[in-house]
Image 1: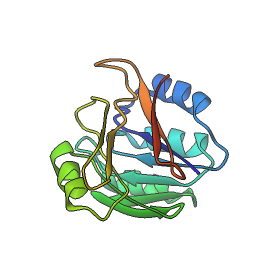
Image 2 (image 1 turned 30 degrees about the vertical axis):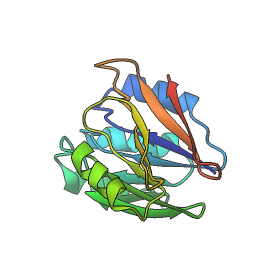
Image 3 (image 1 turned 180 degrees about the vertical axis):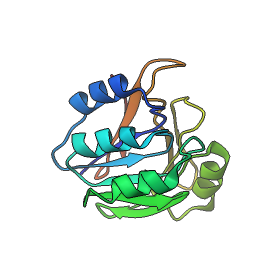
Image 4 (image 1 turned 90 degrees about the vertical axis):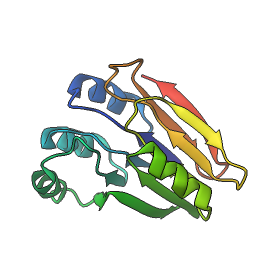
Length: 163
């Protein structure tokens, strides 16, 4: 199973459209690490990806009521709140928007993969305890290229993809 990890769209619907045209749809799940900004961006993501979508809040997801209301239209979308703890393809996955919190989650052990966003800087690190710590960079493309992470959960292989 493939896991698409992305973060920090910040309402750049044009970059999101390119991402949705690029990412794998078959046998894949998507983890969004925060900062849609507006609910219409969440709707675009949900309409454009057919697999399960897992969402955590970012600091720019201000109207959480309306975001939740829009997400409820889609049976394949789950909002986890500030912290996600998932089991996908036999792997333990955790996510939070903030780098410092994600690092502590990864250092605590017990997860195969911990993902985060917020600083818009792509990062991949394998900790001594075996946990893979990943920031997929930013979809919006403000500080650099528009990127996402593609993780093969069966082999725990990471690829940073530029859209």
